[in-house]
Length: 500
Ligand code: ZN
Image 1 (cartoon, rainbow, N blue to C red):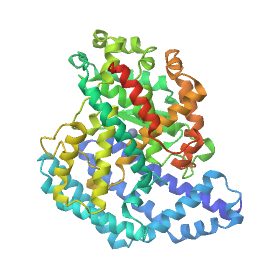
Image 2: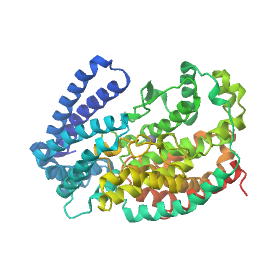
Image 3: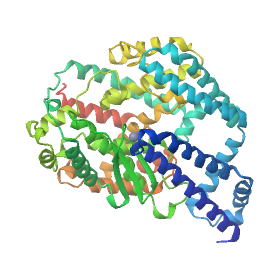
Image 4: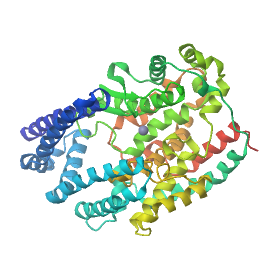
């Protein structure tokens, strides 16, 4: 390593120390900080975030990045460091275009907007949030005019969460999926629905934690490089491949929620734990593409976790830990976790209707950014689409347009990544079955880790090095398509619901 390269790597390490401290404080605030300590911890986190921002925009760092782009410094770097130079240079360039006073005003507006959304949701009154949503949309458009002049703001946003993706591709696959799912959903809803006594039982949270440990170990989460904690909403946080943490929330009368959250977050964590060692400490050491990340959590949660074959080797152990589950046969359990309901809330939706919840949000976001819909008409537009896709109308704004926080902090373009993850999963499943044979046979034999290993080899080890479209191309050998996931839904729900 030459002198410039050494300087670059040393500086990167310092930035990494700050980053780790900031994430640690965030982890602590969500899992352990007592109520009265929260403000103090938040203040310290803000302090460290500002120092990190100063360091990552300092002229010394900027010069170093410029130097690193020269062939004598760049050409012999490993792939992770090359990615780091490219990615951070691009980010710096975009950040520099944002005027300081605009940046400060947008942070202040975001905070006000999030508070207004909370208040609006509590009183189920969209008119409280509407003026702030209007300002957030204007702000986000203005920001994109600074960072990516001349580009369509919604495309810029979509690209921020899933690099290389655009609305033309999303329109195509979401359209394909919607056309196939709407008639399938109507057939499912007309069929006989399962009945289960599962929610009549009582499930000790400590026992649920043991079930979580069993499930995480089963799917290949490494407890020597990971840990668990409790929080209001489950999430995953990674510090490095040696330290990836997941949280969960336990409900006394609902064992399913924590089980599937454990499998979902476990999927995110397994990705983080299996990035190639040589990427450690670089900007490529986790996957920043939200659709790809979500595809991994959902592959474990839905594609594997909702199959009878997944539970066959372990269901009796789960019943031992949660005695009230002994009343529920494996078939009843599997029917319940595949129960398709046309419900109001996205986060509680089953894997079929979930797709339509996302399509609805994506279509509305596009209308907003094309300027086709006045803000005050959003609740009506929302309800109209709910009626048309799921045949139900939210009784109030809280269970309709106000249910998600994403728009309150300006995260437009985030929603489609959830469904892209599911669409990728259909393609990954097809590619995997070509390599490994029948997935149910593997699962029945207790070989779920063979599947995990396939995902490690084909997807996880690359971290950020392959962009989403490249992952699809390399793993599946064909362009993005919703056909495989549709085929999966058709086959599975024809069986589950005995559809003719
Ligand atoms: Zn997730």
